[in-house]
Image (tube, rainbow, N blue to C red):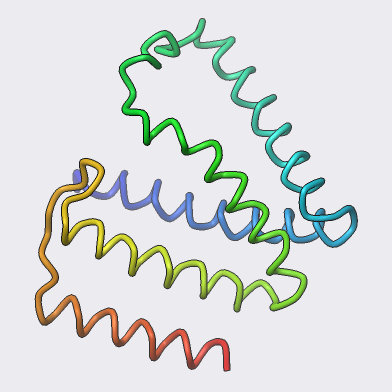
Length: 144
């Protein structure tokens, strides 16, 4: 029962990724990739600012304790939105998201295997390798 809330939140996040991909692809098709990146991040900045305003700043002052590599998340967000804005109108939503998800899952398994960037180490065993192979087969079936 304790895991239900995080699972539901993760599912909501997945739905949000799908919808954001659709919308940023539309913006990218109509305005251009970098314009889409700008518009999407400007909207995110506005919403985050309003939320932080109501939280009276939250813990924003603790930013100096964040590892340097984690501060790259904003730059990586530009890459994500740019890639999705470019790929969705050219490949279709399902194909672009499928390729994105397979990349996330494989990288996640590799980061966990080596315990990089503070991730809990979980070695690649035979069942995880089999799962990755099944993901590749599923990806091929979806995008072919």
